[in-house]
Image (tube, rainbow, N blue to C red; front, side):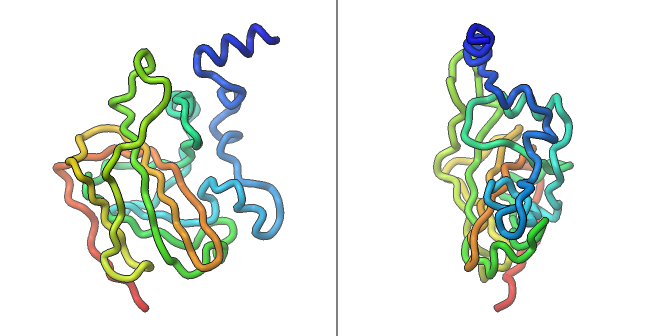
Length: 190
């Protein structure tokens, strides 16, 4: 057993690699607000350039993406490519819709999967100089800005949504394309 564990660690396969994507990304089964404390995005809704995130259920894709050493599980995806200058609307939703409360801030981190080489890199590095800025009030859309243009390719986009009550996060597998136009601006209400 020790030899098997050491071999799995050397190959970048921890105990999580034995789990199916459904098991890895299952919501917390506690009651009340405790359903949300694993911060796996089950207590929020995210829309990127008009597309609502959906659960990443494909085991092969889940194994491939989650085998990369990082501090989060990728449990969500977008069905179609989006702009490298995307717009996000994030807020309350999911299995405990009032968990976050009034939206105060939405933040994002971006990780380029196409640039990751397991022979060279020991872990996935965040793309520097990327941030979200509000188009109006926090309940409206937020647009992605970056110091350097993002290239076409596969990324993990982590959206963290902070509210008056709490926060949650979704790690989302996305395909970005600079040829696509970002979603519509929504300045939000008061």
